[in-house]
Length: 147
Image (cartoon, rainbow, N blue to C red; front, side):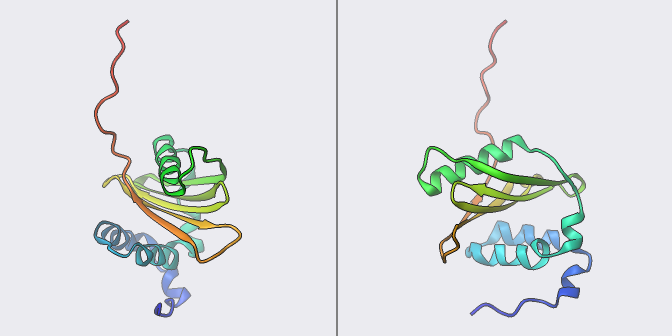
């Protein structure tokens, strides 16, 4: 049974000070559900936190999210709709949401440790939620073409 959620006013207090805890949970997690519960409890449902940062693009992250969704959903075609990405450059943190095919997607990513998590919840909502921990690390180098 999931413990009761923390007091809302407690969640509103200084959300950026809780990012190191989220990062540690991400790195050490064996139960990804606990990591996303923490994210939603302290960040995803925190109006103050949601106003921090600015909308932007993170092309490499977007590619990794689509690739991760392809693997988990076993589909070569992933259509990403209604996506928004919020960048917090000083914290090297990115988070956002959108739709991947018939799934609601929520994600967060720490640039400094090159690790993040993606949650895919089936729509209409069921108990089926896929949780994926990922890295954007590029393996090898892209070959340089001679002029």
